[in-house]
Amino acid sequence: MALPGKIAIMGGGSWATALAKIVLSTQDSINWYMRRPELIEEFKTVGHNPNYLTSVKFDTGKITFYSNINQVIKDSDTLIFAIPSPFFKQHLKKIRTPLKDKFIVSATKGLIPEENMLITDYFAEYYDVPHENIAVIGGPCHAEEIAFERLSYLTLGCTDMGNAGMLSGVFNNHYLNNSLSQDVIGIEYASVLKNVYAVVAGIYHGMKYGDNFQAVFLSNAVKEMHRFIDAIHKIGRDITDSAYLGDLLVTAYSRFSRNRTFGTMIGKGYSVRIAQLEMEMIAEGYFGTKCIYEINEKYKVDMPILDTLYRILYEKRPATYEIRQLTKTFI
Image 1 (tube, rainbow, N blue to C red):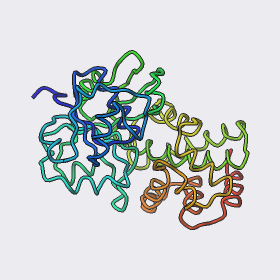
Image 2 (image 1 turned 90 degrees about the vertical axis):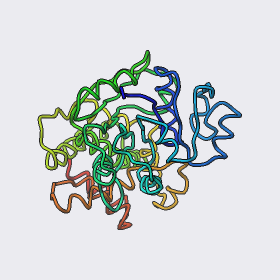
Image 3 (image 1 turned 90 degrees about the horizontal axis):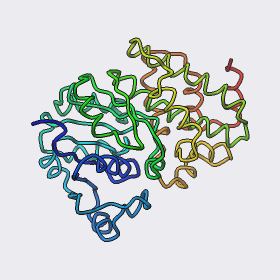
């Protein structure tokens, strides 16, 4: 089989919808898995995702919808997963169809909770997918700007650069460019950490800290990110590349960032629970904070920003006090 073959989008959220829009700009048709059959029926009726990016119209004649995850896997060659990390395991445990001969693309910006595993490692260990047949999509890129067809960039990571190049043809159109990287581990961890730091940026925003301070905060955040990623997988990466610094900046500053929005509510005095209830979408940074904190119990990297957010989110420490103390550590 010549890759990419038949492509399937796995997930029904905003990022999955944006990815479907991108793929249909370069491919004649796609398969699309959504968990809820009633959502699929409404999509077919109105011609767009009823819940996310509703302005993006689709030619449903080019889409074969599935609510059966095993059937879509059987009928597809390349599977692009855009399922939020907290729900990843509950979707995958339904799988009875072998994945080892499929090409897997992870667009999930998170770790598997409890296992604290990278998505790529999870597929390799539990589903026998070779690492060279697993790729990741890194930022900086918001789904909402894809909907508007604003010029955007992705980073495509794969240990096999031939497969990464194949993906480049799928994700390259008049509003989207991409770059290739073999740093799969670095891209995945950066995708988790940028959500963590975006929550903190939001807290500062909610507490009325200004742009001057945010610049200092993000300078410290990218250093912390670099320390952690290097401790786990030290290679000759440039942390200022768009997959690392660029993704951090857009997630921390953009009005489309759900993690920043979540943090802003906490900074304004919302409890963590109320902020979560107010959110219409998952803030991955909440889950990522606990995963990285637990991983770092092994590596002992100096991570004052992560530690501060963990105390706020999981130990219910006062955000005002913790955040002010954190400012004293910045240089």
